[in-house]
Image 1 (cartoon, rainbow over the protein chains, first blue to last red):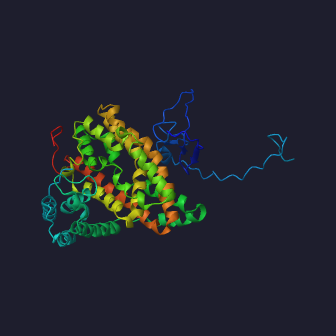
Image 2 (cartoon, each protein chain N blue to C red; image 1 turned 120 degrees about the vertical axis):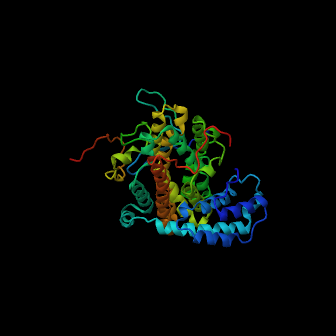
Image 3 (tube, each protein chain N blue to C red; image 1 turned 180 degrees about the vertical axis):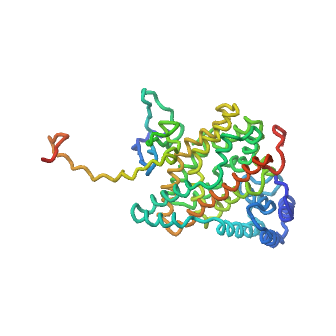
Length: 89
Length: 351
């Protein structure tokens, strides 16, 4: 394994899973490390996988769609001292 | 591998040339005659076993055959003659649905070429037609039929991923990185015991079958050889790089759930995780590969070279059509109470 530190990249696939590339530890709800058996893994995000947290292609069978997932506009850079919530009047 | 047995006059002459090293100059003309006389090259035993023998010169070679014959001009011409007609038949028989093309044009305009190509490939591969071999195996296959399925698949699975690897040096940038990412996983990520071909060999041994490379080539019918020969043709010809990319994408996109069903078939007969490892591994692996293959590999290639778009779709459609025929042959044979092989396999017998 390389000791170089490259950023982990997550790719949200259209109508499908999240691809994970890079050296990152995956843990289950109980905090146990989920063994990773390949360099690139796909995490389930439709909820139907039989091998969670990994994807098994079930999203296709249930017609999982991500059409509502539109690219977000960049958030305005908060001025120093600004709180996290500044609702418009 | 062991040189295959001839299945007709053409393969007789080709194999005689290969084993003697004295290449018959009339082979290309013989190949034209054989192919032109064939009503359906996909089930032509003589033509398909000839192609299998000629392609193997580029992979592991044939026992007792001079390695230099790989580049013998007469043998290359013979192969080219058969490939020309094989490809022509596939292009006649296999169609990409019109509505899918129309939708691809529309989604290209809204989301861009690479995502649109991936979407079209997922759409194409979801249009299932006809009976499913994996569903049959999950619910009905007998123990003997499980063995037959492994014998049928061993012709490809013992060299799993090799035909598509030919495409790597023909690609650049995004699609090349995508193909290498998939293939590295296919080849075990640096661990030979995890290589998919090695996992398949393990499954074969678990059912008492001989896992020697090419061991069962003589036992499988032409249609099974045709599905492997098609991949070899797509892989070895740079001109067809779009087809081999589309083929791989379709292959990966129709793999995860079927492999779960195949695994279920073996579990139903009491086989343990050691035997089903190959199938279980593919459920997870191919859910990753299909995403990479759709967007980065196929979509990425078409984005770089838009002229290859239709070949990518054709390669995918050809994969579905030919593998559909392979599966139908097995289901129909078994439903009729017959073997799907050319000759019964003596399980556990030496090669």
